[in-house]
Amino acid sequence: ASVLFLTPAKTAKDRRRRSTQISRKLQLLRAHGLIAPIRSSYRYRITRKGNLLMNAIVSVRRKAFPKELNTAA
Image (cartoon, rainbow, N blue to C red; front, side, top):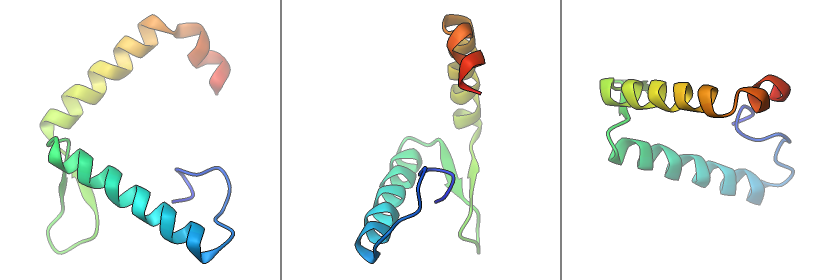
């Protein structure tokens, strides 16, 4: 969760809210077939469809916004 949020959660309510947000995002990615669960684990893997789509998005973003990507890092 620390990768997705800039600051740590301050209260238990915030931790619960963030956990719910992450669960919803994972559920959405699974529904679209972009990730799949790894058997006997709490981890996910990127599917072939997800890999193709994410590579296409990254290449379009690099071509459309090269200056913005250089200043962000």
